[in-house]
Length: 323
Ligand SMILES: [Fe+2]
Ligand SMILES: [Fe+2]
Image (cartoon, rainbow, N blue to C red; front, side, top):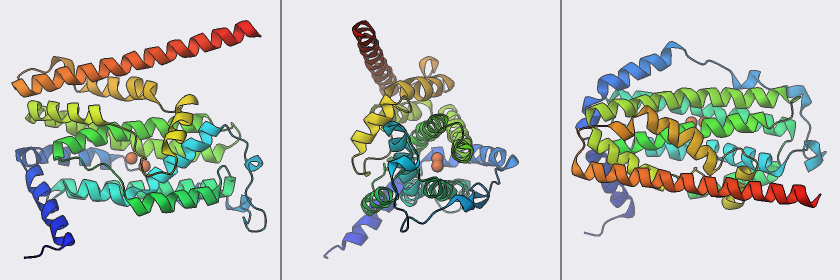
């Protein structure tokens, strides 16, 4: 029989779904319900259309965009660009998460709630970007086209890896939005508010996935240790499908918004401490090896961060001496 590419894809998908439906998904059901209920106890019902001062908008056809419209450091512009495009890529993230959200399981309902909340991030950010003229709208739209045509997002292989990955990713996006907002001019109250609202949503998503992963550690510590170790050694901020991503990532790091230092200090360290990675007991041999690897990766990142900080201080000192 000649197999059709679509059939192959579906077969592949069902194999992955079957593999992910090990006991963990079954046993974690009460925790999903508990954390979903906790999330819904304090719903964040903000409206994207209420955040924008529409009267400030101007036609780009009558007056084309120029950087002087909104003077801003390159790194901050890059951050707005990358963060908005990442929010635009939501359909592919939902697809990736749905692979591990079988129908009839409460995780499915949560994934829909999560998608509904995430969807407004790109809406409100784009409205603010266009009205404030803080970044080039043509470059933004071209970037969106290129990125969305690729549909590149990570596809964690199992439910365990998925919740570990999303915990780190939600925390990372929370930090990136928060730090970008802090770099906006003080008088852009709308922009600061928009990014704070998004960061607030990301915080709640992070708390859901972080605590779900904590619950998963209690159910199957060895499987979770292996999953977390794998995700940490391969974790990268989303955005590989964005044109000139590396150039933007370097600028964003230089601006002190998000780089290796923030990944270590604001993401990796607090999250691993909360899961009590270092003191977990009852691990299998394989999981013990994974823990050692995980701690090695963390130590290597810490060394790089220290080296970069040392280099930066040397440059600062030599600049000071030459003045
Ligand atoms: Fe988001
Ligand atoms: Fe998010």
